[in-house]
Structures are given as structure tokens and as C-alpha cells.
Length: 333
Image (cartoon, rainbow, N blue to C red; front, side):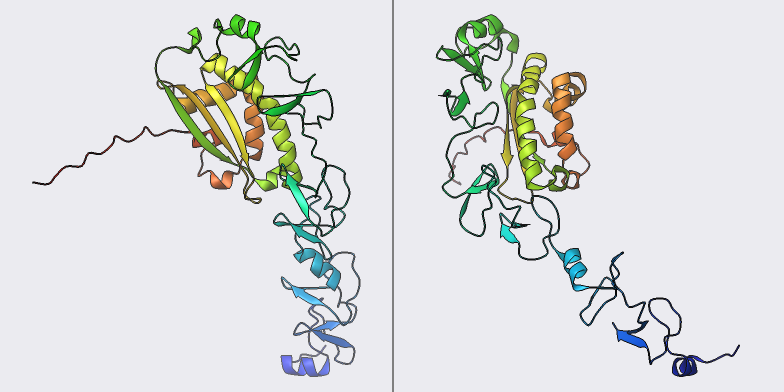
């Protein structure tokens, strides 16, 4: 066994291979990435890939073939979340595979031509304008009616109290929900929709509003946002009724904001008597009332905690500021 200094070692045996660390004779070694490699060690760093050729790329200290370099740096598809490694489509602020960028109505590819946006999803330009039922979310092609500013299947538009079809009968809208007149009188003891109910209690109402930021990662992308919206629309009415009847919350409404595709949010508004601590009561209801627990769990599961500053999603609720007193101009002495 002989000892060599670094210079003589490199000259007589070859410099160390960057891959395995053993001497790499110059006659059979490969120079790449400012390093020397054995021919067998000069391989793509992606497990299972083969030897590198003349074209290679360095990424995060590793050598990659062109295919895996593109895959590691490609944006994720808005629909399937797989890497879009070339030949994709850019739309709605996201990248899509061509086969994934399809009309949400027909499932047919949209290509690179014009398209429309409905509920945050792409649809073909000039696609059918059949409205969706406000209750079940399915197209209301026939046997439909228009009420409360929305279209409904006749079978879906039912009284909140007795679940009977409303059809052409007179109904009352209370807290955003339809009641047959007889049911409204039975439940609230008032024949008119805007008369004060006996169970509301005394005091002035105070209005609250809050923004719940949603995590696109937790939602699972744009497709997950549509699924969340549908599930939220299903759970909110039961939670609204429980909060109204048990806590005294009124006019609870939610609005999904998707103008910023990467930072969606849910705006909540409600009103209650001015002596009620809305945040404390809501927190208690989320733990005690079953419809509220399910609704609250849904919001918690997609809540963007990076924007929370340590507070829960209901912590963003804040009371509406009272109108400022008008100022009077005074002449200076």
C-alpha cells in the first residue's frame, strides 16, 4: 500500500468520483457539473432512471435527465395535481394538462379557444345556459320554478318546516329559507314575515361580519373548492336553523370569494341582540349543537391557519361599527 499526496493521487490514479468517492481514472471518467464521475456513476438522480447522456441538468446539487428535470420544476395541474411538463394550458391563473382542461358541463376538452367560467370552473363558450337547482345543484332542465331569486326543481323547493312541496302555494321567506304560510304562523306565531317574533327577546340587533381564509392545499385545488362549496351549501341551512332557534343568531349568510384563485375565502355575516357575545356563543354552539359541529368541522378542515395569527376561524367575526355622529362646523372665535 502506497501513500500519495492529493496532486499525485489525481495524476496517477485519477480524482475522486463525485458519485462514489473512489478514484476515477481520467481515461475512462466523465467530466460533468465541475466534477469527475465514473461512467457507471454518471446517472440521473431520480430513482430507477438510467445513465445520463450528453444532455443533463443540475438541480439542487443533483444531476437529472431532461425528463425528470422538467417534472421536478413543472407546475401542478389545477385538476389532477400532477406535473404539467409541457404542452399544457394556462388558464384561470393555473396550469392544466390539455386532457384535464375540460368543460365542467360536458367533459369535452376546451383546447386553447375561448371559454366561460361558472362557479369558478371552466365551461365551453356558448355552453347551455340551463340553470342549476339552488337546492341539489343539478341542472333544472324541466319541471322547475323560479323563487327567491333562484331556480329550483319543483320537487326540491319545499317548506323548511314540514318538507312539503311549495309549488304554486303562498310562502314566506324567513332568514333566507321558505316556509308555507301556515307553517310560518305555527313556528313563529306571526302571520307576517317581518313582524317581530316573540322568542327574539329584547334589545337592539348588532350585525357581525368576518372572513374565513381557505387553504387551497387543504381543499385539493380548484376541483376541491367546488366540492367544498356544494357541501357547505348542504350543511349551512341546518346550522343556520340551530343557531337561530337555540342561540338567537339571525340572518346568517355565507358568500364564497374566488376572485383571487390562489386565496379563496368565505365571508360570514349574521346579526344578534346587542347583549350577546357572538364569538363566544358561536364557539359554544360549535361544540354543543350537532348541526353546528358538522358545519364547523367542515370550515376547520379547510381553514388557512397561516393567515389566522393563532385564532380560530370564528375569531374573525367582528361587530359592525356604529355610524359616526355627524360633525358640526363651528366658527373659530
